[in-house]
Image (cartoon, rainbow, N blue to C red; front, side):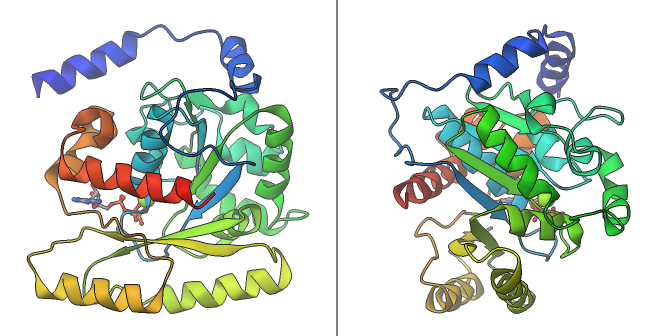
Length: 297
Ligand SMILES: Nc1ncnc2c1ncn2[C@@H]1O[C@H](COP(=O)(O)OP(=O)(O)OP(=O)(O)O)[C@@H](O)[C@H]1O
Ligand SMILES: [Mg+2]
């Protein structure tokens, strides 16, 4: 606990570079010959992480896969699209009410690059934070022009303003206008599935939604990864769910994320599990998942 308080205090008093400097850093084209053990994609990959079922490991997976890639030298942006702001918390960026972020991008039409913050996890990791204000975005969007395409347009502009290898979008547990914006803006979808009895409930509805979006608003959207989370190899049920998911979805990554205390406690230290406890089984599984995703490019 003392350790946690010390870290928090260090974060609160840390001197952050001028905003302009950070933006210049992100706008600067990364060195093509940079050292990385993970494949650099030929063009930026935009991956939405969605499942309208709550608590299945969406945020945990976004945070740890993004951190794993960034620590290996890839340049990564995380867009926090959930008013709960869990990804912003876990990646240790400022997101108290009033801090500009996803809400201002979606509702006011601000540029993403104006509000991104660098995560203390890695120089290569950037976050567009979400605050509680975002809870009002669904209603505010309803009457707006191009309400489903606002994130898509903002991301198109971001890719002109800046360089990123990967953009991960962390969705709230619903299929409302926020998630819809993500599904329209992204090329790829990753579905985390928790290894428990009702795991596939809701996935059918999500797949139906994806098909509707493919037919109307975004014909390039593809389900490219399914990730098994909170896997407990000791229970038969988890194995059965994993087998069923693998049979249903050939896109299932071979890395399954084990249920692990290290994974769940890392955010309370404002860290990913990769920097918090790299040798742990959870960190190693997320590193493997990130490597597999990078290898798809
Ligand atoms: N591999 C894991 N081992 C142990 N606990 C985990 C693991 N993955 C996630 N958790 C815990 O499960 C809870 C839900 O995870 P998480 O917040 O990532 O899910 P989510 O799908 O983003 O939830 P929401 O739908 O509310 O956004 C959290 O308390 C998290 O710490
Ligand atoms: Mg979440």
